[in-house]
Length: 257
Image (cartoon, rainbow, N blue to C red; front, side, top):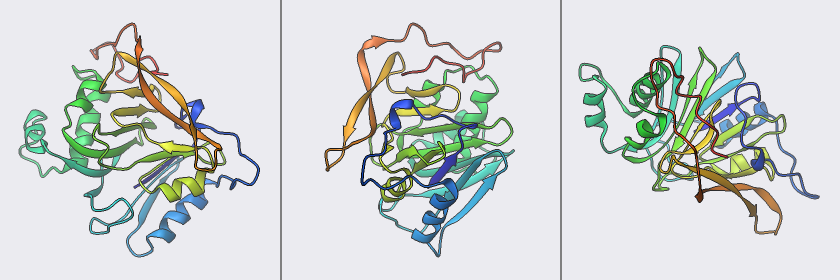
């Protein structure tokens, strides 16, 4: 899985950006990172780019890259696209919940349906919708109509996911640590487990939605500052968590950092 979003589409947290140290590799541009991904998986990688400054890539379902074996899916529906890695243990129950029993639905299509429910102002807050997804997963959704990005990683840490900032400021999200490290230099870190990221709402814990996230300095094996990790701040509460209703856009929650 690889997703790249230019600055006009999504902004990563400022703390993820680490000044380049002497001798450190220079961050690369999005087109170079995309080429690296295809070079790493020359027979099975495929990708699509969007005019608004976004690109999504994936490898075939039967390929087992560095992260080990996980289901891999790439789907599009009504100009909403999802790259999904892992599994949903309660897929059947969610299919019934979203009224999709008469359709052939996999995990990626289910996530698109859940996102569309949120986008169209469904009755639940975003954190609750993601929390309802039981399993080990990572996904990135791109809404080509609105230009919105929505990504999340399950709480169990069973699926690896990394993110960083490319040379031009683009956000890079990928399961392959080496690709993110080469592409983003020192400005990369593991994507925080139990968290969701939205291009407008920023980074938020869906496991602990009433707590803010704090950035912690991250030092690599050479003792050099390298991006930042984000942890739930148990001592800092968010004043309120707006519910999603007919008059409220679900994405407009306060930033968690």
